[in-house]
Figure 1 (cartoon, rainbow, N blue to C red):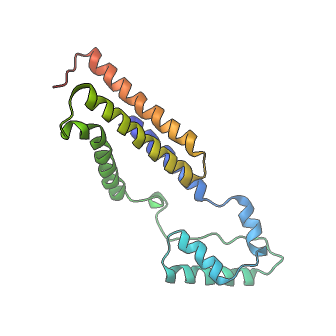
Figure 2: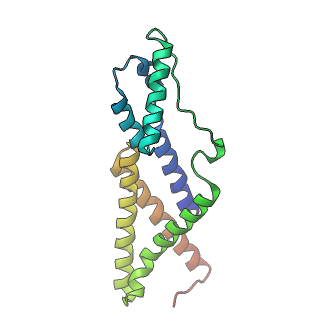
Figure 3: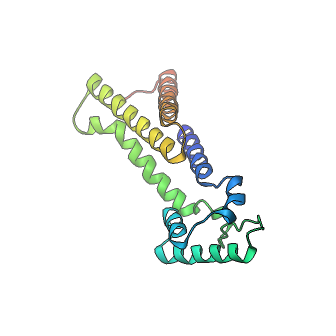
Amino acid sequence: MGAGEFISVRSQRELLAASTPSPAVASALPHLDVDTNELVLVYRARGLSADEAKQRADDVLTDIELLGPASRRFHADTVDEDPHEAVGTAWGASISSFCFFASGAMIPVLPYLLGSTGTTALLIALVSVGLALLGVGAVVGLMSGGPPLRRAARQLAIGFGAAAVTYGLGAAFGGTVG
């Protein structure tokens, strides 16, 4: 669970960093030749509804006009929300964590539930878990703008490392399966 939380928080930070504009954006925005439609598309891509995106684009373009071309002041998006809730609510995080952990826990158990036993089930579980870890890591890499292969390898190493530690502790303390 600790390895899963590490991956979760690390991935969230990478995704947030990838979606945060760089300081260069602040100085470039007043000098861009954009129209409302292009800016609406940007806000739609960030998840706003069509009406919200249109309103936000109009507001930003109006602010830029008021500031004048000589001003380098950047009007950042301001949203009235609790800064602690900026990346989600506690309830949303707990429900999504439960769902994702439960679905992830099903992957290694599925071969056994479908009737496989012994080494065959173990190999199917290892391969399916490995593919799931690689897939999730690669998707996080793509979404965060990082190298997907490195993110996939990191996910695989941490996931299999956690499994190895769990197996080792079980063997050391006499845990049995079956």
